[in-house]
Image (tube, rainbow over the protein chains, first blue to last red):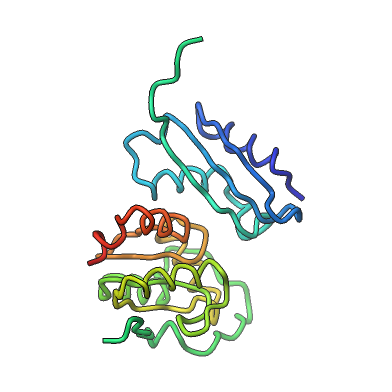
Length: 82
Length: 130
């Protein structure tokens, strides 16, 4: 069984600089919504952005993850330096 | 012209293949299923690989994608991936896309349900497909 947190960590570990929000929307640990923002997405098509996320979750989709609704985007602006 | 044209791809909509007697040897042997999928993608301007048929979708994501295409009045071919697990396996290998549905236009993967929905909401889908 996967938690939303595990999926979030997996995506963020695989895509440098990614910030993921993952929600288990059925409460059954197999249907998730993920929203991922990453600078690595800049200049990529949406298909390529989703492929990066799918690669991070290789072997899980169709297995432990039955459905993953996915939204990806590059950051709108460069994040402010703290 | 009807909003939905279900255009079956004969080789891809046959009876389920019998389970192989022995595990298939892995190898670079080109698969006839893969060739049929590639032909279908190149021969149909807009083609949707889905679970079920446009008339009877077998999954909510496929149903939503079909509904969007029908709302745009775009003719499209549809292939049901369920009858033969090799279709899904080979399709995902071709497209690097693990989930169904998958929409192709002019030989290119447009995306799955989420991307099709986003593009529909922004109006981009109609521009791309028409």
